[in-house]
Length: 341
Image 1 (cartoon, rainbow, N blue to C red):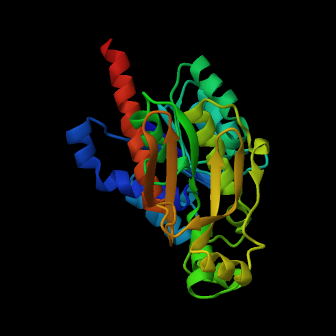
Image 2 (image 1 turned 60 degrees about the vertical axis):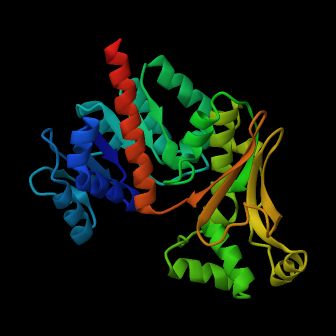
């Protein structure tokens, strides 16, 4: 299976490390031999129809800042849309940064891939947040697969749980903590009596928060995930503008003390039922959703099974890469099933 990898940051690099580490197992147990024929970052790319040496690509990125310096096959003029159109491959793996304004450039990458007959695996929430129904329709129209389990929950199979384990039930509501960065910040404010800015500084120091943390702390990352879950698991047709969104910048130590006096913690909760919302919310200490650190916790309320909670790490390069590999194996099974008919 030939892959073009667009985006070679933490997640993209983690993905190639993972498939390199598990290559023998993938071939022996799953009959999958992923061959990465192109890798692109913001400064160009490298291509080899026989498959790139992934360790060499990682070393080049680490030492020079771009895979475009890969000997002989590196190309500083290679652009993602050209690679999607011109390089023979079955799968486009899209891991560029999330843009909640218009979904670009990831949206254009995915649309082009579908039109070229390529399957897509993505961890990019932006395109799904702004154009999920249209992308699903375009994939179906072109007879290709669209897999995105890494967009929600990282390595924790939140989307798969809702789609598979509750497939015979009807999901009435979903709510939970969907952003590890804000959960860490709120936890530091609560346990260490920090104010918001100090807790954010600590999150940056530990690598949990970006230099520009607005996607996390202003609630947009959680809102993207609510859109994805509402559409994929509940059959809604949401976009980001449908989600009432409030972040955590205005939470104070006084708010934390009042919450503690009531036996609760303040958590950034995303929810979707009749409405879609993201807002700081009091969560009782005895509630299974009251998790701490970088954990995510999601409660599904379904018509027959009632309440069920999934808890796990929601971020991290290798955790997200494991979801991408899960999608790759799912794609292989789908294709094998189609060919077997």
